[in-house]
Length: 192
Image (tube, rainbow, N blue to C red; front, top):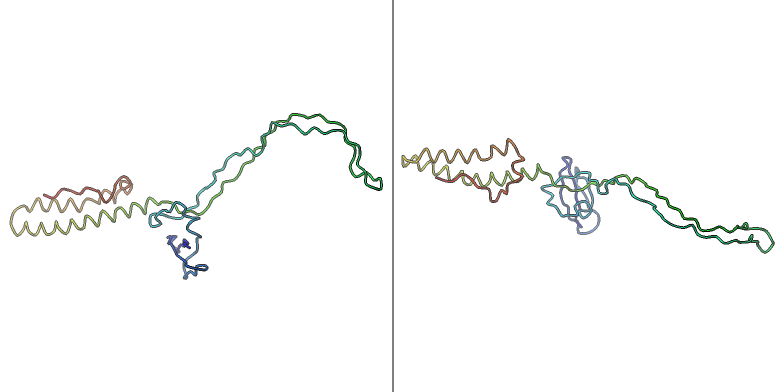
């Protein structure tokens, strides 16, 4: 069975237990079964635990009836074998139409759930962009060294290297820019 656990920093982790109940090391707290707290199967590395309203507060029509009361026919008193009355006599009563509506407010139900974390997702995207950029930076450093050795194209090689360094500056200043970016297809400055 797959369980979710959290540490003191509220980071969530998956714990797979083959049989029995999970035995947790010190510092970890059992959240519950993954199927209950992460029914959508979200990538937990991009998520956090949060209290989520799973049934919003709403007015529920508990009883709305256009009905007729049962017609009660006349009945004599019911007596037991000793002649003692156990049910009183009932007079005839016609059916009566009724209409009633009773509304009850049902309070919101909250549950600890795995939800996407924009911050974690953004950091992960930035890490991918930086890893791709670092590989290009290594090649740019070699190109700058070759340009110095050849004595030509130094300015272009240095400008390209600086442009690669500056790629992540805008993202660091405003992480929300990463929301619209696919880090695997992000276009870097063109090599001279």
